[in-house]
Length: 114
Length: 110
Image 1 (spheres, rainbow over the protein chains, first blue to last red):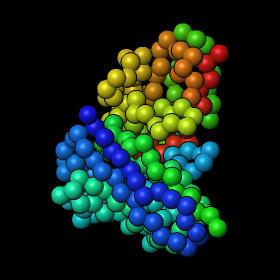
Image 2 (cartoon, each protein chain N blue to C red; image 1 turned 90 degrees about the vertical axis):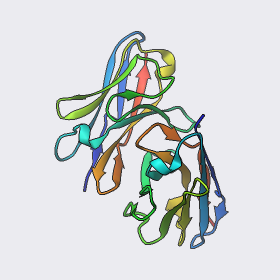
Image 3 (cartoon, rainbow over the protein chains, first blue to last red; image 1 turned 180 degrees about the vertical axis):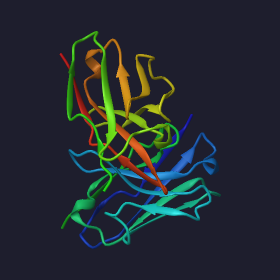
């Protein structure tokens, strides 16, 4: 059975940093590009960032470019999202997703507030 | 700027058939956009219904089907049930690693 388990969400002050992690199991992690998707409270889904199978190529939404960094450790079947210079508008549930298939995590909540 | 369009809301009668669409503000949607469809009930993570245009996710009833209709991706629900009332989202691949979600459709079953 496929599992994507996100962790690392927390309450953080504006300007602060967080690192999210997503532990993958039940499928061949190294066969898939991976993404982070977020959903602000009461809002729709937003694609945030993606990474290639090898990790050599990364992609970002304009809203997070220059502040967030996606990475992966294929030896640990884990996806990461380093979030710096956090803003109130980054408050959201963050999901680890494989958009080429049907794998979604349950999400981890990031709240940016003073 | 690429905008993925979805109907903000749609109504269907119980037992009826409804087709939700997913378009682009500029251009046509094709299979090369690998459209995916998600269902989300309040307080829950999204659930994949359809990926890669028309591949049904495991456990999804065959009442749900995906296709390309004209210049849009489409999600058709046949035999609508009360618990189909929730939000539906599509996402399209725009190339260069970029995906864009639609704003979502709130489906009302009454």
